[in-house]
Amino acid sequence: MTEHTIPSKSVEDFLKAVFTLQQQEERVSTNTLRDALSITAPSVTDMAQRLVAAGLVDYQKYRGVVLTEAGREIALKVIRRHRLIELYLMRELSYELREVHGEAERLEHAVSDHFIEALARKLGNPHFDPHGDPIPSPEGVIAEQHLQPLTLLVPGVKGTIARLKTNDSEMLQHMLDRGFKLNAHIEVIERDPFNGPITAHVEGKRRVIGHHVAENILVATDSAMDSSGC
Image (cartoon, rainbow, N blue to C red; front, side, top):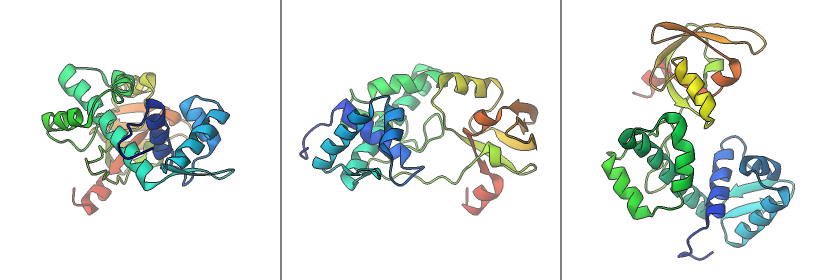
């Protein structure tokens, strides 16, 4: 792939998936990519080998895939497009949070960099999308977040909901219906053992949420925000 070649949708989706999955593991296995992209394992291997030739990934059999610097640059461009589009859909077009991911998935491949930078200016050059995910800068810089899942928040420690990391529309709506929304103040009261439900005060109201859902609610504790100067 040359400097002026526009990556295809499948290439952009592959690189974005690798970037996202690399947040959990240094090298991403072909089986993990197969599941994330809903394609066959041979298709993952074929794409990985094509992108090795293009200088966008490093792929080693049995060890998985990792992005090169060039691949990371493209992935962050796509993620920037996606997250800015999500924010625009909610802020300017009154979309619901549960609706924005699928719409942004379709639009992110169809718009130009020029359009995206105009969109960013329109939105005031925001730093976070509607889920609380950081929006990469035009230069590909992405903010680090020091958050912890609600499942690990110690009872009595206060914090603020900073990220809803699922893209599942039904789970998002479930969270919101129970008051677990971005920037809400939260304090865990009780955690049932054996991955049972979690009881918390959310904006002063007693709320209960299941363990699996709570894993997708990320919290910035008050102590962490104080130490970072927020």
